[in-house]
Image (cartoon, rainbow, N blue to C red; front, top):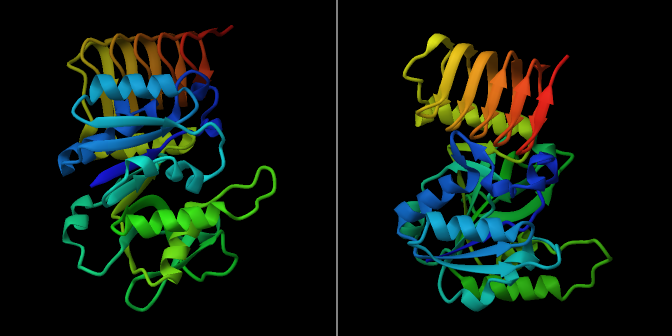
Length: 330
């Protein structure tokens, strides 16, 4: 099985951080977002991955080659942002067997080993999550046996509450690319995109059975508020790490504090991640992610995302600061 990971987007909802760091490499729970997915793929026994890159592509390639040399990795640039079908189409020269397609805007709790037990005659799997605010998502409509019939974008009526989360397994890869070609032959207006879900609809219209499976959890990393929510989930489910101690240190779990962080006269947590090399003095932090080698003094911060090598002094409130920022309050 091969894997296709489209990640050419600019991550505009995570500005200013994505001016210097691609969205898949932003930290959550003490590690880059995409590392959780790559670790799962490694455990599954995947050997070959096609990364569809674009914005800040050099950072993605450098990270993967450095941290995951075990993968046979291909990096293909998507020069024009023409949609999800356009992204996956670029992987076609590398695909000659079944494949997983994973969009890394989110993390998920899913048993990917299911693909090894899929009954004969089924063309693939689309993973979903039941949501109450179905009008924000593309939802999957199924038949009585749980097979996908169609995907409807942001429906006004509750025809389904199964949100499409961007995780797919396709066994019939030939029919998939036939569908992608069909979709991309359609005439589009400038700025319109070609959707991968339309290729899935082509597959179904040509007799394919795509099973719908609900994930146990689905965690958004696409904007600052939801990234912080996902950080809390990760800390509550195994990523927490209390500091060894310090002078006048008060902790409200869950937190994750890297080894060697200097803490003095601080109150930390809940939901705080502090990376290596930081110095935190006379400060109070909650619901905050702090990048490496950052200094925070005399500050009370909440609901904040702070990059690497940042200096903050005398600031109260919520901040969003990219790498190498310097902020001093009155």
